[in-house]
Amino acid sequence: MVSLEDSHSGSNHFPLTRNFYSPGSTKLHRNTGRSMRTIRSNFYQEDQSCCSFPERSPYVSENLTDSVVDMRLGELALRTSSNSGKSTAASVEEFLQLSQAFSDFSACSSDISGELQRLASLPSPENAPRSEPEPEPCEGFLQRENFSTEIIESISPEDLQPTVKICVDGLQSPSIAVKQSAAAKLRLLAKNRADNRALIGESGAVPALIPLLRCSDPWTQEHAVTALLNLSLHESNKAIITNAGAIKSLVYVLKTGTETSKQNAACALLSLALMEENKSSIGACGAIPPLVSLLISGSMRGKKDALTTLYKLCSIRPNKERAVSAGAVKPLVALVADHATGLAEKAMVVLSSLAGIEEGKEAIVEEGGLAALVEVIEDGSVKGKEFAVLTLLQLCTESVRNRGLLVREGGIPPLVALSQSGTVRAKHKAETLLGYLREPRQEASSSTP
Image (cartoon, rainbow, N blue to C red; front, side):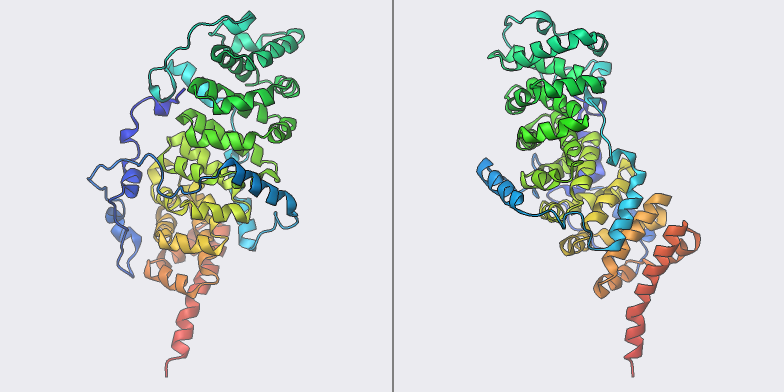
């Protein structure tokens, strides 16, 4: 299935972001001591080479075998989690409080893509022709392919348990057609009703769905991953899905699935990451690099799903390190600079999380993050300005070098303006940052004979 945003050719989506990452693009250079407002036309100048995204991100290098994954998970099991929730800086904690303004960072929607496909009457995943499997005998309602959500939801409570049993039995059939139909029906049954999700979770469906995540048939894989996403929204099912070994297979879908399957796999991992102990396992299973790839080359919904999942996973240091190593900073800086996507604020949330480690700070400065954040302070939204000044404060508090670079980026005038006309929180942070920016100048003047 595809979403409405993906129903047309993606070749014209976000030309700015595409050209920013084209293999032939050069690094942005700015003269020192100039306000970003005066060079905005250069900052957003489009590359006319019309290069397209590579099929795979050049930053995605982690390729874990099952044996390596199992070894890493074994190592994680031996570690204590006493320090897993600690933050290295008070500003990070404050930023995480600010980020609660985004409700979609703490929740995910059930089966969005299915509704978009139904409303748009779109064909197969990736909008490509689908080779139909040979008709094979199915029992009962598995034989019917065109069940709407309304029909499925009208099944009476007394009929629900035998219906689920038929589906679970169908998942173990040697027939691909039966497996696909059974997964599709479970997907619908688990879509909107919490009581259905609980019953399906207890019925043994989860262990039967997980092998289908590696199915070569894209529709079967998509139905299975979306059924697991829907089931994961019920709290008790999270542990069932995790204990059945779903994480590695969900990462496999994130790497190899259709656009919709990747998006729903990201959402399923996000749902499982709401259990604190799962964050390390998801990172160790190699989820971060394909999330970065989705952030670079995915659809609008794919980018948003990747941002949301990265945000949740990067609340722990090992995943921050993995995200920086996978090249997450460059696309995040590009999204901060590209106001047209509407994802700038969410990108800053993740970027500020990565600024909590030294490797992240260095990468943000190297990829032009100071310039992009100054631009937000000049022309961003009210909330965006708060996020931007807080991220700059993280970058500059303990780095005289970064303070000097921020001054040369023309950061002082917009910070002064923010300290006078911003929100109470933004004013306080801007004043604090301006205090740090004056320190090197005072030291330099005091050393002058």
